[in-house]
Image (cartoon, rainbow, N blue to C red; front, side, top):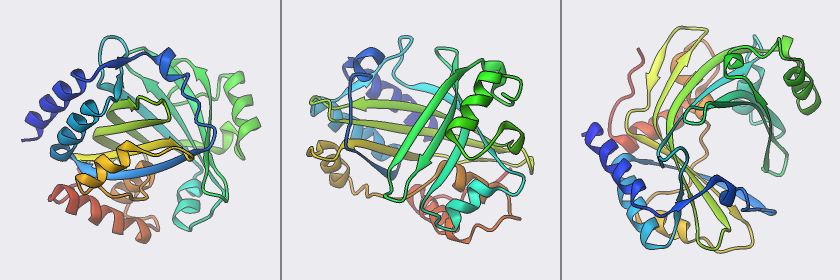
Length: 265
């Protein structure tokens, strides 16, 4: 069933009119509000059909609209960034490298959340060979020190994520939607791997002053907002030694959404 869903998702995304990266970069969301949603692949196929009917466009890069991404999350030996999130610290950060597989480009990315719930992302280009370690890149190290609380010496690679993404933009250019499927995680500390099977994580980035068609589409399909972090869910699933009680509730929600038990390898 999952393989069939993958084929149907590819077909549904491919049928949506295209938007280029240059056009999408012109979408300036000055009063940006981010909302995450959780669903499954079968429901996503219906959401994509409704998005097409409502005039959404899909980002096309290198001739495709479903693109593979790889990310490496970094943390301190004591997992400070994970625990800050678990302990509900309002001001927190995450540090990762991300590879855009189709274009062969990679970035060091720093995500910072403030005490108003707003997230800002800073990034700088790196070589794809530096995904696991950028410590030898003086420009990347300086960028990290400038925009985060950490230095390259403070951090180690903790977790890799691999997924496939569809990005949609509405006609009015007031919102972007990222849709992540085929989520797979590998924990470098424990050696454990896990797949979220046919779970789908959606993030809606919108201008806070504008109405959202997508919110209506998702509501029609009973897809409701949920606070979920790929990094925190992955660590919870792959490292039983960490304090993760608050995130175990989210794991059970994912299992209910896909109607399957998540099995760690």
